[in-house]
Image (cartoon, rainbow, N blue to C red):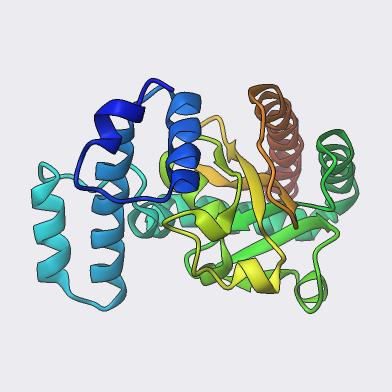
Length: 246
C-alpha cells in the first residue's frame, strides 16, 4: 500500500493490523495517514480537555492546530446552538405526526441491503442520541429509544459532515473504549449524515454489525442515498408541523 514505507518508518508504533486499518481508511477518504493521525490527536486533545472543563488546555490544543477546532471535534459540532435547535424541532415534528412508519421503512431497507443485524435513524442532541426508528438494537436501548452521547458513534458524522465508517471499533483510536461496543454490540459501524437543506446535520442513518467487516465504497454510497431519502421524509414532517402551527 502506498502509505507503508513513509509512515511506518516513523517513531509511531502500531501493530500491523492497526496500520492496515489506518491505510484502508485514509485511502477511502483520499487523504494521507499523517494527516489522519494528526487530526485524530488534535481532536482527542480538545475533546478530553473540554470533557474535564480545562479551557486552557483546550485552547492550547486548538492553537497548536492553527487556532481552529479540529474538523472532527464532536463537542463543538454537537453542541452548536442552531444545530441543536434544528434537532429538537425535528424531534417534535416526528412525535407530532407519528412519522415512525416511514422511517421504519428506511431503516429496514438499510439493514436488508447492507446485511446488518441493526440499523437506526439517530438524532444527535447535545447530550444524547435519540433513535426515531431502529431495528435490532439490544435492550434496554431499543425500549428506551435513546442512549447517552457517550455511546454515540453518530456524533463523529455530525462533527465531520461526512459518512463515518468503522471496520472494527475495538481497534479504532477514538472508539475502542466506547461503552457502545458492549452495550450496543457495535463492532462495525457505518453512518451517513442526515443533512437538512439549510446545512444542519441532525444525526445519521446508520447500520451496525456485531462482527468486524470491511465496508465497500458501494455500500457507503447506498447508505448515503438512503440517508438522503430519509432527510426528504423528515423535511415533509417538519413542513407539516409548521403548517399546522400557522
